[in-house]
Image (cartoon, rainbow, N blue to C red; front, side, top):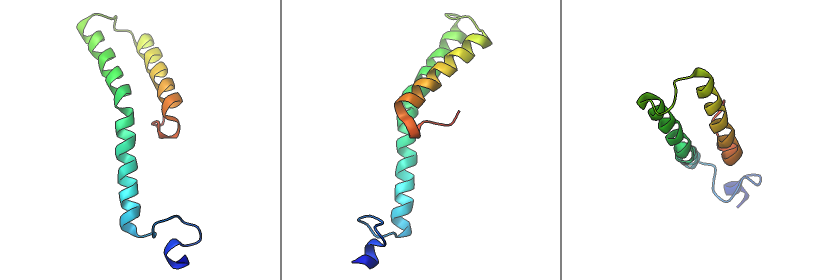
Length: 82
């Protein structure tokens, strides 16, 4: 049994297929978790392009810092790096 689990490695054997599947799942989950924040950024860009909001680099920076802050607050370690 120790041969399968390793030194407390977990319930599944440490085979490369399981490791790859875990990495793929984590990448997918991170992308899905980031979708609402990407949608917010796209909405802001659309509002600027349509003229509903002024095209200001200062305002765009403030908006991005705010969205990135919420993303880091809500997603924690799954948030993208700044």
